[in-house]
Length: 508
Ligand code: NOJ
Image (cartoon, rainbow, N blue to C red; front, side, top):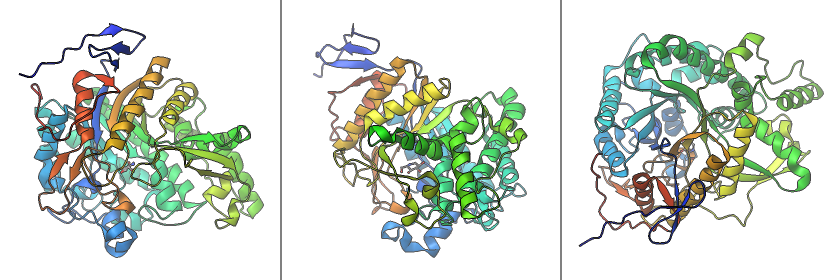
């Protein structure tokens, strides 16, 4: 007969306790919500079915196929358009409080505009939301997770100021359609990746490659669009729907390589995520002063007649300031930073990194995971949470993504260690006073990892891309996450066993 393990808890410090096997366990705050996340293009598939129109990732994967590893596409992906019941079953197996997913703009508004609403697309999201709510799993919706309708891209996408109206109109329709049941909204996922990787660089659609220029136009328009939608929800929908709305920023930790590099590291932090955090969360608003100064000085020296960083009007500064109910944070890793005044030897003379004048890299001593850019550095997460608390007057923080990659296979011990160590330092930050309210593991299951295709696997569940069902199987980390959610504690000694059957606990 199996003995049920009873947790005998003895108080140590704030969250540290000893259980009856002698292990130290740490308790999470009762109010902390746990979930997982995905995004539409990465999981849905059905790329041209039931009235959906083309988006920028459909275009990129079909016209430049081998830009993506193995020439993979999201045409079928995890086929979640058809597999949503299984997806919700997995959420129940894990015992999630919520699930964060995104809406495909071109699936619900095939013309990009509200003149036509695609009923089949709306039904899909209604079915998913209603299935989740049946089991008390809260839907958290991201309005924009990188799959812009192709038509809007042809009009310049986020570099065209009219995106403010296009995004507001789309968001209004979504609040009308789903806001009666959805109480957590994220406007835009990772503006830095949207603007920098897609407009300055070439590692995300639309791969414009116009560095030092396009990303700054994108950043301005994106911030105004976000703020307009925040105020629209706040004024027109919050009174009756009563939800929360905010933005999701990506932030790596940037650690100075040497003592003398603190200024360089801080400048990189201000460019990389301060560019979006400062306008929203600082007391003064606007782009970070160092960013304005550096780009203006470079632009003048290069012969431009004005700064390549566009200015906000004072009305826009006020509109954007405070326009988020929480600090949505995607965090994965850390880099070491050094001053480099000769960046333009490496890039064309006008470029984002030339504007910043730094170089950065990851230490070879840090443990690797399955993604080349993502080493395991938990102390960086702690430092980042501390800085957000100190710089922005301790805002409520929603960790909207955290996790690491592996290759295929169920024995993902590295991911198990990653989650344990990142959650451990998150608890340290909470004990120091950080107001962390939400934690989200990326990802529920393997999915289309952008230019890495299906090579980098981020899932708690493995997805079999050889099977037409896209069979999902829990990895070790799924068993770890389930145990954490069941006990609401972190036991660094818990060793998950992926050979056990995965079941749904009572009440889920
Ligand atoms: C952040 C992005 O939001 C998500 O789409 C991506 O898959 C993960 N990072 C992992 O790279």
